[in-house]
Amino acid sequence: MSIAVIRMNGSAYFRGKNLSAEVNTTLDDDISPDDVIAPVKTKPRAKRKKKLTAHRAAYLVHSFIGLKLSLLFTIVLATGTIAVINEELDWLIYDEMRVTPQAERLNEGELMDRLDAAYPNAGVSFLETANQRPHMAAMAQLSSAEGGFQKVWIDPYTGTIKGETDFLTVGTFFSILHTRLYMPVIGRALVNVFGVLCLIGLISGLISYRRFWREFFTLPRWNAKPRIFLGDLHKFIGLWSLWFILIMGVTGTWWFYHNPLVFYKVAPPVLPATTIEPQLSHQDLDKLGAGIPNRLSSADIINAVKKHDPNFAIQLLRPPEHNGQAYRVMGTKGELLTSSRDSSYYVHPYTGEIIGDRLVKDITALQRFDYAMVPLHYGTWGNEGASDLAVKFVWFIFGLGMTVLSVSGMIIYYQRTRSATNKLLPEQPSKRFFKKSWFVFRPWGGPMSGFKYLNWAFITVACIGISIAFTLQREGASGSGFQYAKQHVGEWTISLNATAGLLEKDLPPIRPGRQTNMNVFIHGGNPKAIKFMHIKARKPRTMRAPGAVVHGQLGNQHSNTIMPKKIKDNAKLWVTIEDWHGNFHQASWPLMPDGEQTIDLRINNQEITDNKSSNIKIKENN
Image 1 (cartoon, rainbow, N blue to C red):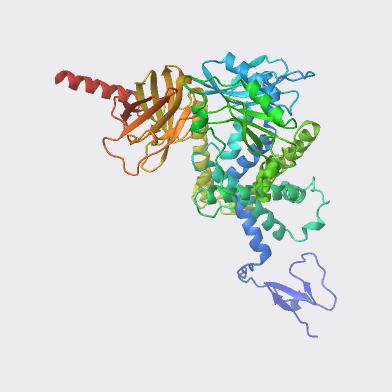
Image 2 (cartoon, rainbow, N blue to C red; image 1 turned 90 degrees about the horizontal axis):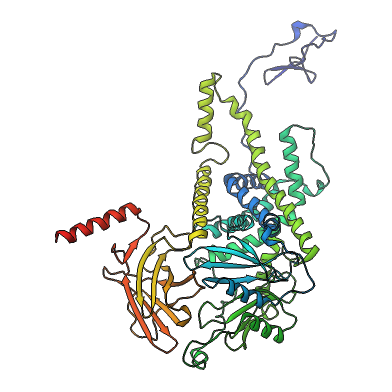
């Protein structure tokens, strides 16, 4: 009798049966134990490299996107979810925001006039009327003469001032964190990158998930192991969030194209160039005659707009920031997928004449597409009432789902690799601890590899930006950058601060060829007597070109001044004031710090004091 026994991978087989694997198997009568060839240990074959298919490539791309910037991705998604309900969140927290609806609302301009009367030494930058929010107070942004920003709330039915809150309310804090991560210069562009990543993640996820359309109604296995449950939940949420992720991806990618690509001139612009807003000409101002003219009240301005367009729903009032600017009244006529303030009327602040408009009905199809991005991204296209709350609720739930996708994807990967990592660890506890720590902290270790340091670097910069933002809220631009000491310019006493930007207040403010924010503070004299104020980084050759115009409300007056490409040692900063009688007044400061008229406030105060003491001693010795 001949018996055929085949050896495969170190095991003995007879008639297709693995004899060595079955310990308790009873041999057939026609086979003797001697006829069975004992298994021979052989070296395991090397694992074959997996073929890079479209399915596997998509999986790798999807994993890479979800892992490498997972910390930042989760922050952007979570804060975006909160930003959807930022108004409702603040309304629950701050009593100043809540009002009792009544039959009629006051004229929106009258609210602004009452605020101007209540805060004569502060500037009101704008007023949000909250016309679409019956239970919410109107809100104005206030800037004090010394710098710093606050929100003041006023009852739109009675005109009673409800109180003040910090500019950075809870909702506002998370909204700014979502849009720019409080990062100077690159914050908005970095957030927009995640819109592109959402779109790529969506496409790669669908390719890697075979026959995904069959799994919409497959519920997660609740009683399975945590990794299996999270995997099922990840797929389930991802499938039902496809439409939402697509909206986030398209809107974020659209903004990414504009910033940074168009902003830094990497790509050509696709939208028409922004036209200059309607302004008051010199002839218009000359018609007002000599002496300080009287502006119309905000109530008169609003009455002029309502008479011109009775169907215009007013949402925002923005007073002129200098005497050549029109009074801008922003609102909507109920157009679908637009923000509540995308249309504007421009009003002559001294005569009430409508001198221009920008209405949604007049824009191109591509501009209308651009206008739709904000309400689609934040779920604000419900406009008002129950429909607004319903849309925001849906956006909040699916935003929460996207956040869970980011977190669960990270956990799934860690759990998949944990067992393999544990096999590489030594058995001795102390060595095991250090080895495990090394796996985490080494540059190439962990799912994020070297990207974990990039994540933490960005988060650190964001924390610094948050600290600066809270300082700005209290102090504004004062106490930062270069300080130009008080000096008489005609009948006014002026000081200035130069900063690279609000969030960039600790960066070098004066850089060759770059734009600088020049913040102006009026300490003496009547600000209304100033017709125009200009700033230039060299002496003006003629009064027809005195430099960049100073604009903004009291406490937030500034100009965007371009620095020369080459800055000389004796360079001067010039301020030119034109009064309403046609007279010009000038003064200058050293452009770069000299320790007396111009001081670098970024230097430690003690160092400044020491330098001043040294200068005094030198003068005394001389």
